[in-house]
Length: 305
Image (cartoon, rainbow, N blue to C red; front, top):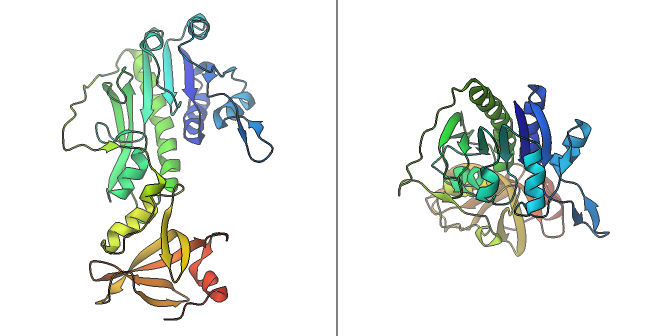
């Protein structure tokens, strides 16, 4: 069974790596064009391109998947299945119709929950206890296709979005390979999604989400910190300094006004929250500085209480 893969970031690499390890016939890997980065604006290949070249997989980097020449090139590959994982662009219906058996997408949530751009982050921001990956048949509407299969995994209460991203990428590769086996055998199910008000759309993140509101409960602030890693990160202004906060844990009970610094020492920086509990910041980055343990930061920047 001939497979064409479409993906761009590190998440997609994990999926492609698993498909390659499981010896699926990958005819080509489609990924976004190289983009200029850093001061020299040197063109940098996508993670998928880097992996595909090392694996001997032909790489295609079209500017647009709506161009007729691009579509003809894809048709010439005669794919049975196209596997999409974080490709980065909406695909036109004419492309969806090309593969002989199906075009499937690896989505990092348990659909229909968290359709959209940032499902991993929103699962943590909302304090969910579990999430997973869904293999769906692609449709013209974003993340609305029928479900082929889903895999569930618990979310560790100390796990941040970056760590969960890595785990779901591996799980997504496993799920995609199982989905291909079902398609090859002719046993792949289709379960329509039923979307309702109980499900949340996973909108894109923005820097406007970063500021920490100390009037919120401590647990919500822990989730806020975990959910915004690695970008845009939670930020707060304490003692006249702006910090990015990377790690924190629940503290004890307090009657102090939310935002009050209760202690600052080897354990970290303890701040009162809106539910009568405190939050202990254990890892941060001050403006112009580097990421470090809060205790190390305090050695050079003591806080007077």
